[in-house]
Image (cartoon, rainbow, N blue to C red; front, side, top):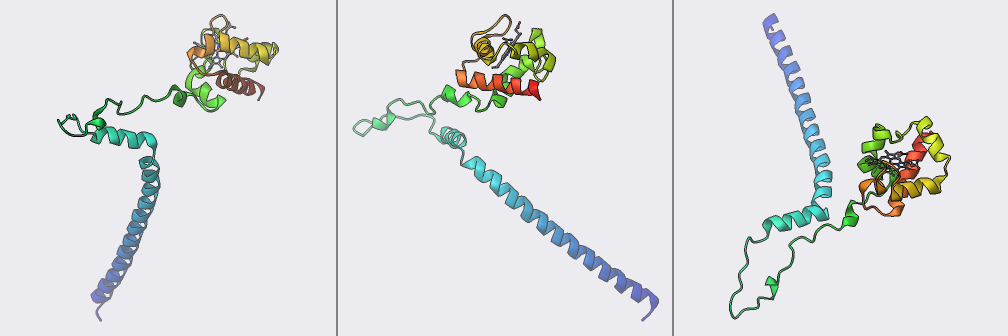
Length: 169
Ligand code: HEC
């Protein structure tokens, strides 16, 4: 075998090995992407909001009553019942804080005690939780009642608890 042939076959071997590795990697990535995508897609596709949005999108644009037939399905019914306000109520104090309270308390705007600022919160905490709840629910000076929301007491209190806990860390 001449020198040139050896180096050719050496190159070919190396080339095939590299190609093989790349193909295996590509297949691996493809499989990974598919399995990740499936989990997310499945989550999304089974969500009630998603399903009702699809129902709305594929609902016939207009429905006609046909004389002599059963038209009971045509009684006006809202395609998607308006989301209950309860759906917008955050579940934790932290979520409530992030959603609304932080707009003032995050940076300490307009004299709002800044979340996590121990010095600003110490005298307020000293009033006792009952007073803080009362002020958060009914408003106090520039603090709007319930931070301007219609969230129930429990949510407001959880948000107060959360801010108080930040000031105690
Ligand atoms: C529009 C701005 C704004 C929003 C939104 C807001 N706050 Fe306040 N908050 C204030 C201001 C300003 C004060 C300080 C009032 C004062 O003492 O003069 C305050 C004070 C407080 C106090 C201390 C009251 C006291 O007795 O010292 C609590 C507790 C409180 N806010 C809770 C909340 C909660 C919980 C939310 C969210 C649900 C919220 N705030 C949203 C502006 C806001």
